[in-house]
Each structure stands twice: as structure tokens, then as C-alpha cells.
Amino acid sequence: MQHLKLYLVQANLTWENSTENLRHLGHLISGIPENSLIILPEMFATGFTMKPEKYAQKMDGEAVKWMCENSTNKAICGSLSISENNSYFNRFLWAENGEIKAGYDKRHLFTHGSEMKHYTAGTVKITVEYQGWKILPFVCYDLRFPAWCRNTEQAELMLFVANWPQVRIKAWEKLLQARAIENQCFVVGVNRVGEDGNGIYHNGSSMVCDAWGEILVNKHDNEEVIHMELNPEKLMEFRRNFPVLEDADRFEIGE
Image 1: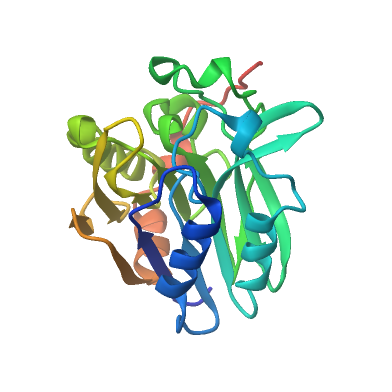
Image 2: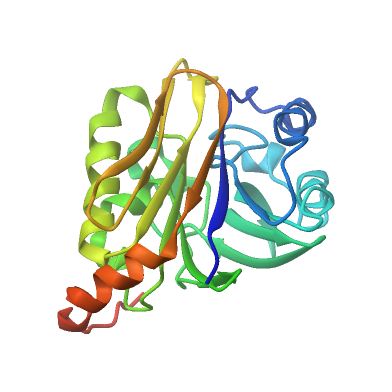
């Protein structure tokens, strides 16, 4: 495994305006070097919209094409409101070298925000492999459910992309640390900043935690692209010397 170059895009999203968001995000990520992983927030093209019938993308739509176009010699990921087979999904997509390599539909829909009334929940976890790293992707509210996030795959990295409001940001920060400690892996959370169309303010707090739960980076309030490089050697040594995952309970989650 090699060091992994991460770029966390803590963006201020324009409400329900895909064209403007893609233009702006394109500007933010321009110049990011090859062999990097770019991580965008949840529903990066629209914000956390509950109008998928109007704003959801098709899998051949402009936002998906934009991801492919911007993934030449690198990887880019984030979630979109997706329309497919007469249903709507909050779908995490992974684009790499010009094509979509993987997709994960958000398992835990945010009842408090009526997400379950508009979107269909996913039922399958996925694993993405990139530069020798095994990566588990999740979306926002999934963070609160440790059984679903259990690292039975022994992945080295978990990703959480979010539109997590400032009013509950302490929970976001502590849960990211908890997922890192209990799963003995790096955890990255990428959140948006700014006020959405419902008047809800987001202050970012995009974070990287190591397997000890130590916060390696935590950026508040400002829109920025956060660069971080992960070294797998200390993680592998930690797992060899303190093999917590070998003692984890084995179970299966039904639908």
C-alpha cells in the first residue's frame, strides 16, 4: 500500500442548482494532482433536496458525466440524488479514470428530514479498492448506526459524505472518532458549509481521524479544499500489535 493523497472538498452548495454547483466545484478541484482521491459532500449537485422528482439526476446525467470527466488519472466521489427504475436514491458514486466504478445507496434515510418519503433506502454495503486501500463508503445519517458501519471487511478507510447541520455538529465529531476507534481504521468525514434552502446552517467540520481516534484535521466554517495524506504503515503496525478486529462479533444484518 502507498500513501493516499486525499482532498476533502468542504463546499458551499447552491440550493437545487446543479449547473452552478458543478461549475463551482470544478473551479475548486482544478489543479488537484493525479493519483489523488477527491471527496465531495452529500448531494453535492443540489444540496439535501427533498424534490428528487424535479432535481434528481439520471445515471447518464450532467453530474455523473462531470464526475467521469474530472476523474482522469484520479478518483472522485460523493453522493447525488439519482433517479432510476421509477425510484429515487441518495447514491454515493465513485468515479475513477473516466468512468463510474461503484455506487452505494444510502442505507439509513433521515426520518427527521422526511428523506424516507422521497427516497428508497439501499440494502447493500460496498467496498472500493484504490491504490491498494480497501475503502468503505457511507452517507451522512449512516454514521449514527455502528452495526451497519462495522468493519467486518477490515477496510483501512471509511468515508462519510454529509450535509450535517451545525446544530448537531458535536455528535458528528464524536461519532467520527468513535467509528475510527471501534473499527480500527482511518475515518474521513466531508461536510458542506453554508445555509441551505431550508435556512439550515452547516459549518463543515470536515474531519480526518486515525485508528486511535485522534483528530488529524478538523476544519470549521470556511469553504476550502483540505489536503491530507494518509500513511498506512502505522495503521498496519497498530493492527498487528493490537488486533481488535479479530475479536469483533460476527453477525449479519437483514433488510
